[in-house]
Length: 117
Image 1 (cartoon, rainbow, N blue to C red):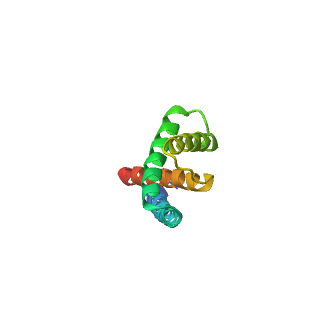
Image 2 (cartoon, rainbow, N blue to C red):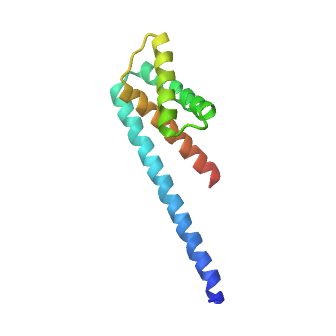
């Protein structure tokens, strides 16, 4: 059995590499889909403001709500974006806000995975 160890390690390493590659491809595809959905439902100026605020809200919720899970962080990020948009006189649906935060999250995941590879 010890003579199989190098082969098993090579197989496991290859499978992990394949899994990471598939995960990166899935994240990239999801990011494009979310971005297209957002682009179809908001004006250019709203999109720019929304994307900037989504990135800001995502970063803030990740930093301030470390103990909270994903749903709690998302709730806090939506509350932050809603408040910021209200100050600018913009009102967008919660679905658009959630999609923008999801796009910011996917963008972060894509960039962090690329830096790991």
